[in-house]
Length: 312
Ligand code: URA
Image (cartoon, rainbow, N blue to C red):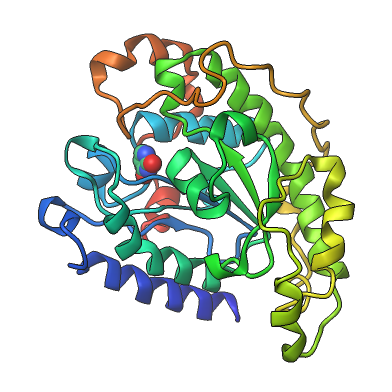
């Protein structure tokens, strides 16, 4: 698919999202939030669902959580307009409550189709609900900073999924911001591994695909140094030839950061340390957090660049 074809396909999906009435969230929304970013990116971030700011602007991650996400992306030398950012549900749950299972099910085909079009090498999940799509049954406190091959049924047909906390979690547990920075620092290395896997996998006959996908251990969650072994069963399961084109060096900083040290054990409940937080916490909750974020690093104001991103 050419970049122009990708753009057209993503716009078509976004158009459907904006008029969607498949679930009750449609009734309360101001704007649906299809997602935005670079159509030929290799990296897709998947959050939970729009908050109040996103609902008002029709764009993902533009509130406080978005400011932190933008800062985290910047911490590895990338910019948010170099990746694609979307959510599990495309309309704001009322009062920022958690999305219901039937709402996520109704919205799932949109994310699946976006991933089919984008064909990313790396999908970064943000928070428990996004994690649930790519790491079923996992616990965020146990798998953040780790990755596994994405199930092609998600739409990401040849990708690695990498789990992170939701940025809003840092608003309730400040220590998580450091954990997220450490996890984010792993991403360039994981992307390199993901690219390598896509390049090395030979093309196979379509007939081989179903046989091989059943060989992929569904619950295998990997540390970066396990990727070589983990690719073995997938090596034959190529659904597409390698990268879509010569991979752009854009997303890998010239000086690739060293793998971050192992995340520190959580002091809170180790089984479920991601606090339940509103998708986009209210201003009262944020005073302390915002003081700790370098707001100068966060492009909140509309600019020609961010206007461009509204295409999607
Ligand atoms: N939180 C999310 O999960 N998604 C957004 O787009 C904004 C906040």
